Length: 497
Image (cartoon, rainbow, N blue to C red; front, top):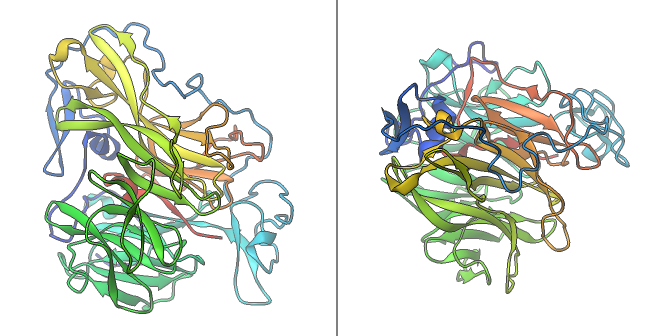
């Protein structure tokens, strides 16, 4: 395809990984997010990382008057009242917050001058406040082209643009800590991934090659993270194995090993990070040092570190259930001081079952993340139908189980306020969006981005912590399909202020 900085027509294609094979999913929730309803009498299964529509053999009962099965979802509607401050993301972004008084296109010297959702950009002496960018991986060219690393301003009507100028696929865009560059995986030749970075705003033909898959001894750069560190970290991939953490400090091309096993790195600072390893819970490691367990995190997975509050956010399994494509852990969400503690704080957990004809509707937690200032966490509650007597596998609501689940939507995105001193949940979780996934809070805490129907949305967060009643802003056209199939690898990434 012919590459352009601004996309004309954008649409869905399948995820091409470095082996040249199509990798669509990790579980059936990914298939539901990526492909929508599987069709009458069908359900999705994720088999060998590919979505397959299978016959739904589960008896589908009358759903009766199914109610919200979430235990921390409030009433199942927008639990926040409008405080009058939420606006279209980037066009009039929030209210006066101390020095954050300068609106879009206003003169500034630093991003602290700019209102929420804006950053100070431009040459010295002529800087102005402009909407932040969001970066995602999306499929383009009406389903005929490869997936691309894409960025878009967080304002209505902004045109998404490709970050790569290569003819092949690109993916996993990640921002530098000052927001002036984006690193992403690029394949000029299928099966030969290269980690590159480009400056923002884009300059034609400008790119920096950081390392190659061959040099880094990996088939892809999974679980990649850059900011808030000056180093890029990723988990190595070899066939179906995704384990072992490597790092690199641009402009150096020297790849270092942070850990020979584990995954999901989350930076604490330039020299140390947290991660999880099977059977070991959450660990901390300083480059060149020996990993150490984080006390109290036994069984913890996929840690997220918050550098403002010094707390970790992570998942822990409460058991498993059997879906069509295999066993699925049922996760709850916890916080813990980064130094470890005797006990953790439970933020959200599996729901109490709600009885329906032929079984129960239940839920578990996934797709978690912090607001950068530590005042909120975001997460997804995935609902599923569990038939009586183990007569058939469980079914994710919306995945061939709509009748069984009744009116229960899902997966749903929530926003939960957190006490920054204790790490405990404060108040009731707010429902941000139904049938949505992969939430991400802006660096100033005033907007939450999420993916719904493979489109990127942004919703305002009022200064008092409630959700704006204004309609969410959609940032991508229907012809661009934002990817969700690899979980946190596909989470929208906000440009740092």
